[in-house]
Structures are given as structure tokens and as C-alpha cells.
Image (cartoon, rainbow, N blue to C red; front, top):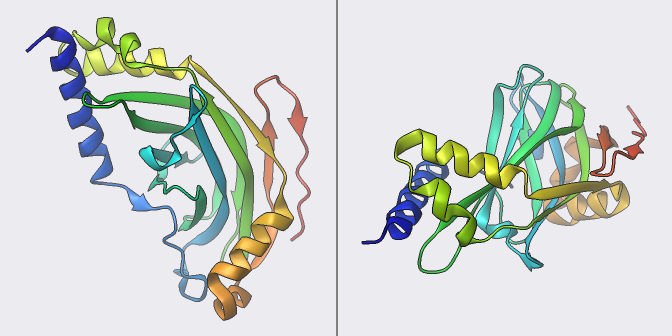
Length: 211
């Protein structure tokens, strides 16, 4: 087996391990949020070289100290409805498993999108996030031949620099999706716009908090 094939196999195994500890992006039950948790929702669309790869990705959300709050497996719809501990929450990045026969990981990280998750009764909207990667298996060939975590770290760092993100406030679209998806249970939580974000060009998108 070639060095490139070994590298691809190694990264595929890393991705499988990461998937095993992920939660469904649509795990929310509006009328059954735990007493010590709050709820949030939004939409994520991920493209790699103009191909929509959202369903091949996981999204990570962390707290102010960069400790993981939740790690979600995205589906092709891109919608996120879930619950976490209340408090400041960052959309911190995505990990995508890409490629054909030989898989590789592409990681994009950011700390630009932050929102506050309140206690029960509210549903925080973090925006419509679009991430554009520019990544292919050839980029993994050099970094991937290194063994163990170092090779993966270098590959991840390479991927994290090969993308850009932007966020839009499409709150009305999100509310319609929430109501259609959960029907009568949707009345258990009150949606509001919670995010403050900087797009990839540095433009600030103001939050319109309606608590």
C-alpha cells in the first residue's frame, strides 16, 4: 500500500472514531429540554470545491474556554436543533470526511460566531452559516504520511486554513422550519435571534436579541 493510501486510511479511521461520539443535529425535543440545559437552532451549509458536502460533516460547539459543549453529525438538510448547557456558545468549526475510495479529513475552525443559550423556555437562533472549503486529497499526501497524531494535526491545520465562512440572519426561515418540523411541540420554546458574528471579510453582523 502506498504512503498516500496509508495516510487516507488513517484519517478515515480518525473520522470514524470522531463519528462514534457525535449527536444527531436534530436531537431536540422542544417540550423535554432538561432543567439544566437550554436549546438552540440554526442552519449550516458546507461546500468543498462547489460541491455540497454538508452530510459528510460534523459541527462542533464550544464554550468560552473552548471546551466542547456538543459535537453534532449534520445531515443533508443542514438544520441544527439541539440542547446544551446554558451560557455563551461558539460555533467552533466543522470536520468533514471527504474523498472517494480513499477518504481524508478536512477541518475548518472559527471563533467568529458566538451566541448565548438561555435557560429553558427559549430557543436561540445562531444564524444561517455557510462554509466554503477548498480542499482535495492531494493536500493530504504530504501531511498524511507522518505517523500518529502529528500527521493528523498537520493535516487538520492545513485544512483549517483552506476555507472561509459567512453568516446570514434568516430568522423567519428558521422559525418556519422549527414550526413545521415540531408542529404542536414548537409552542414549548420561544425562538429569538441570539448571535453576534463576523463574516470572513470581517464585516460584523449585528444581533437582534428578542428575549
